Length: 170
Image 1: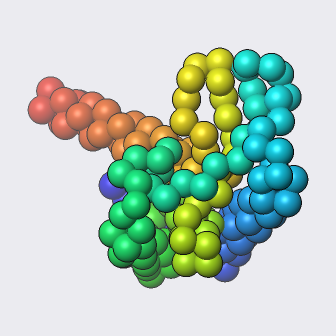
Image 2: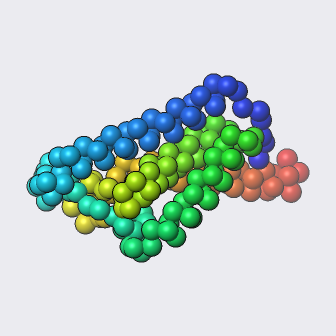
């Protein structure tokens, strides 16, 4: 995996992704508290897609509820580690850094809720597939993680191909 120096434009992109994600997350959660909390749920497409207010006291998608301090500690360590890697280390390519920026953004968005409210505001309710209620921060973390895993798999395949070609004398 080759590494290279980052440019000021890349740092600006990473920071913009993080700030945009946190603002979008917090704005949508504020709207959920203001408009959904009093009515509980609002169907966009009945029994398919709703906006439903939920106080999530657990981890992502409501797992292991009422372990706030554990999640705050683990989240803080993960956010700091990823941010340090993002800003201090050389990246193999910009797509790794964009994926990490999305994960950091979502982590910060949910951390703000845990600190300020003691729970995370969730409101996106996809009933068609009977999935957990989630929020924009969860979307950023999920998309970032999928991007990161995809990039790692692509790099692994390329490394295997290079090793095979080298062994074959190509």
